[in-house]
Figure (cartoon, one colour):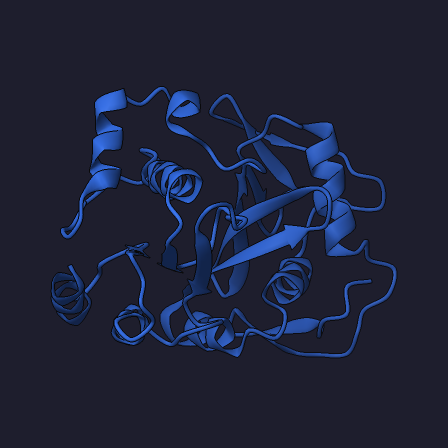
Length: 248
């Protein structure tokens, strides 16, 4: 069993509760789902449904040994396992009704997780993150786009709707710089998706709520950390944009 507190449900928000028995560990459920649907893009946990995966744009309920239709208590327990001891995420879920975190199952996969409340209970969507950091060729991006990795000083904006490939494109930029330049790179993300190993560059990745309370504070701190590249996962507010412009 994952060494994390088990959560019950109070108005749809995970809270500490006695450990339940006879329920499959969350990591085992996730592993079974990926084994049943290795090409899935998303895992979904919802009350009154069996665990679901998305394949080719269609949702499919899975038959997993020891796991049937999920109850509200089941989804709250799964949310607790995923969030673990991240008090910022717990508070954000309580105050705002949703939170984003990253989650890993060793030797299996990483996930971007959104937990949210609906009708007084928890629901969870886990986006599967590819194990390998993408490059321009793998994403089939125009080679001319890589010229943006040479901008110094300046700012490069990657924009688009949800699911359009912003995170993958940003990861490809960082990977290119990592392979070509011996420099210091800082990323500020919510949550961290692709994990970058040190290559020619030294890369430090900071996750919102785990490593820093806000994008703006992390950006201000980065100005004193001698980076040659700062990646900001999202620019949501005026203060973050102002500090980003100052950094550029």
